[in-house]
Image (cartoon, rainbow, N blue to C red; front, side, top):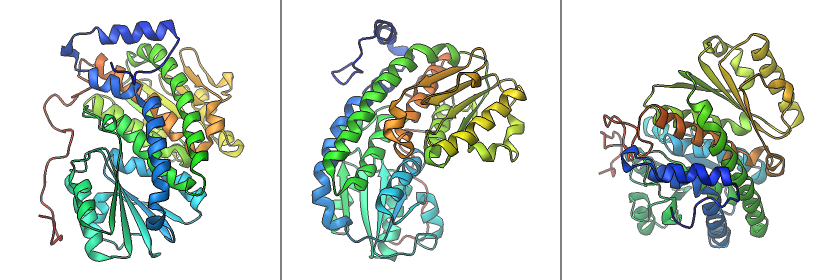
Length: 400
């Protein structure tokens, strides 16, 4: 591991990391382990880069009446994680629309306010729908400015920005360009970059926000690597991830991580607390793991406590994992885990998705290894790949 490894004074965590590092290459876990661990450090690098760019981007972002966040898969969920923060801080329409929806429906479903800013999230910048969505919107409406957040300086989206004055690319540090099939540090660093736009008037305050997140992330990863291996080995075949609207992007991303890293052996669902009662609760059987991302806002927390108490009363699920601050101990049954940190309060609900998703990443990492799969390439038969393979595109004159 390089010097971006998690900084920790925990002897137990150091022992666990050493154990993982000494496993043979046949386990195919080295890249994913490094990329999960490096997140607290890379967030500091990204925060400095993003805050410096806020001045350069001011002419590009000023005066926009709406923001459209787009991407596919994890990149779409990066938009879900960014949207609450941007919505509150910018006080304009902020919408998440998947790249696939733009391909099928064009600009018809996009926020109508103009000028608008479309932010495309793309680890590689080479996925077919990411490139095609940008082209389709560019052809249809020049009043939509295009901002690309990518981790690959050599990707097609980064190249497009060099040729089109209406497209600007932010290319993150190469260390965030995850080599693993699954997105971990690329995901969180792109989310953090998008969030920075909410601090355009005060970049130094954004750096302080990122520093606090980084410190909390170090503590959470320390705890997660010590306590999640045991629960990841339990005989669950389903995992439910619950969150309110502010953290729902983290629930979606965590569910996807588990699906990807177990090649579907663990089926997953992401749902809101209030939505769970409307049918999905019926699928929580005795072999279901329930992961609860908790809010610090009193009204949201009250609804969450009621729902978790109902799960307990009905004896639903195998185990629960609760993540947040000030977790009531009476919500925990024997064998449940609580990842508790006051950093969730300091970050605010709109900033907590980056912290919640860390637990999802580590849980999926250990479950992947328990299943005998390789975290760096868990799709043993090649059904999915690091970059989505080319497919036929329709209705885009310049897509070739």
